[in-house]
Length: 161
Image 1: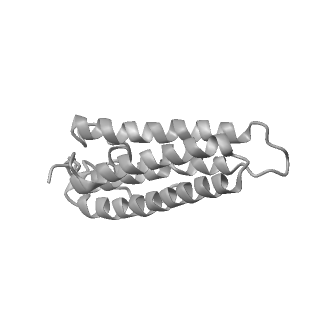
Image 2: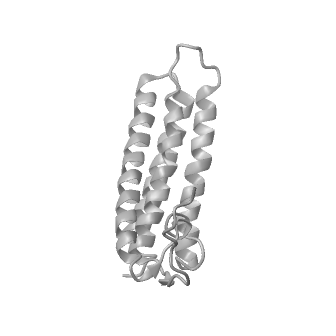
């Protein structure tokens, strides 16, 4: 299966669309309990998936790092030649939409807020973790990384005082 047709790319796009729809629906009704619950549930669920997938990606990347040189930016932000351009565009666009929508939702939520009110839309700032986790999961599974570099010098075992 090619990386672009990966369930991870589709899941990232579907999760992003769900988040945009949930936030877009909740913003005009930010004072209604159902809208607050809806945006909190969607945001926390996507955040939890993001945490799980980013940790899973880290474990898989540790295993792959025995033979490949894997950087954190390559893994979670798909830098360099980690992903083919169509995958990189899709995954990073989804992450960008998540970040922008999170900022917009949290900003809308804070407008007109009394001290005792809940800004449920602020939970939206958790969602970009979903995009980061999906990027990591994709890169750990399908990403292209260079061969492991051999250190040119041995580490010093002297104590630095």
